[in-house]
Length: 105
Image 1 (cartoon, rainbow, N blue to C red):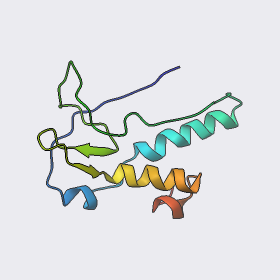
Image 2: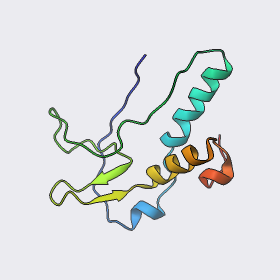
Image 3: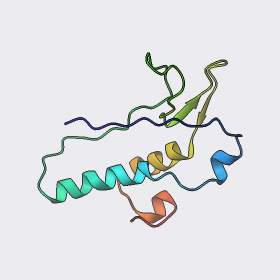
């Protein structure tokens, strides 16, 4: 089964990327995978789509769902807070609060 989502994101000032609330999806989705495993679902793996923002044929650059933001003009890349959280989860191989910087739940 494939499940996915893409969202329209307003382009914000760079500073707000670090000061806003923690993105829920890099924690919520893997926690649901963990719950499925506990329920006996034979999960073979999980990955976040997509590593970087990309051009969508139907939406252009309007949907921004990468862990890394891509400036469509300069192609400059910047890690989003969600990318930092996902990196911490992968590094720790866990959803531990100390790894992601806030309580899980």
